[in-house]
Every structure is written in C-alpha cells, then in structure tokens.
Length: 245
Image 1 (cartoon, helix red, strand yellow):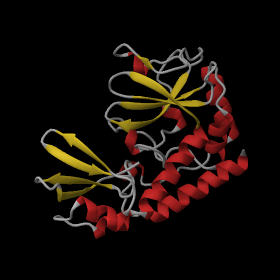
Image 2 (image 1 turned 90 degrees about the vertical axis):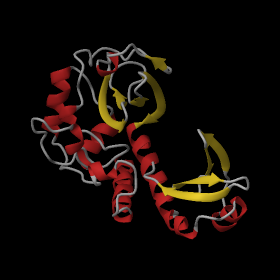
Image 3 (image 1 turned 180 degrees about the vertical axis):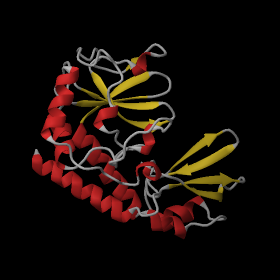
C-alpha cells in the first residue's frame, strides 16, 4: 500500500504543475498545498483520544505525504484556510475532522440514506475529511462494516457511499482532473455562431442537449465548458468555461 501512496503523491504533483491557473474546482481554496507528514506519536494520540483506528491508507497518506496545508486554524477562519490538496475544497487537517462525540460507535448505514436536519454533523463512526461546497460533506468511516469507505452527502441531508477507500477516492479525483486539463485547449477552438455539428467536428466526443428554463445547453465530456444554444437552428450563443472535477 505504501507504493500506492507514493503513486498518489506523484499524481498530485503532476496536477499541481498542470493546473497553475487553478481551473479545477476547489483548487483556489487548497492551491494544491500539503502540510508536513504527521509523526506516529501524533497519529496514535489521535486514535487513543477518540477510541478509533484510522483506515490504513488514510493513515499512511498522513504519515508519508502530509496533513492539511501546514497552517493552523485561527479563530474566525473557515476550514478552507487550512485544507490540503484534494477533491472539492481540499482535505481537512486531521485535528479538524472530528465533530461527533459518537465517532467511536459503528457507522450505522450501508446504503444511501436521508438524515434528519442537523444530524449530518453528528454521524456515528465517521470523521469529516472534506467538503464539496454547497453543504456537501465528505466522510471517512472509521468504525463499523463500512470501515475505510468514503461517503458523501449534500445540503438535502442525503448521504451515499462512494464505494471507494481514501486512496482510490483521491486517485480518481486527480486522474479525472488531469484528463480534463489535457482537453482545456479545446475550449479555445469553439466560438459563438457555430452549429452543433461544427462543435462535434472540432472537438469530438459524445454530446447531449439539456434544457434548463429558457436555455438549451449542449454538453459533453470532451471539454470543461458549458455551451448555450439559441435560435431555431440551435447555434452556439455562449461558451462558458467552468471549474471542473
């Protein structure tokens, strides 16, 4: 597993070099920074304090790669000021992950569930490691049958399993971001007035139309942008690059 941790570190290093303008969603928060690795004494102290065992891959990441971005949380600051490189707005420092007095109890869920309002911040058997923004929380299960799995929930208090462990979840994010960054130059080949056929001819890929209100959007996995269509012929009227992944 140590080799997998080092492979992930290499992926993050590549992503940091490729995204110096912080196009990837959340990168302006964490800026791909990573704090110093945590010593064994600090990891063991954390586990003893809360009566839990950290998943091995997450523990190795903290001890081999780093923890948060190396800064300390100050009164009045949001957690985004101390997050390290990772999905969404980054990975919280270990010291900021526990927000439940029931963290040592078994995580009670095995499939997607809707939680009563207010309960999302007091989950048994899970630590909160990140946020995707807009109320979406990311949890790592530390007790119970789902041990080691990442769960995500949104502002509607609906939590669902990703079926990924920490390393796989981080690796998937980094690989997807690198893929989309490699296609960023394709956005520059598009211009208003193009037809849908011309868009596909220029950038390729599978595309679909989606209506939202009075707008028609032309969307595909090929480029990190949203294309607005207008007129009876559905020509491109707006090209809106967007932060992705």
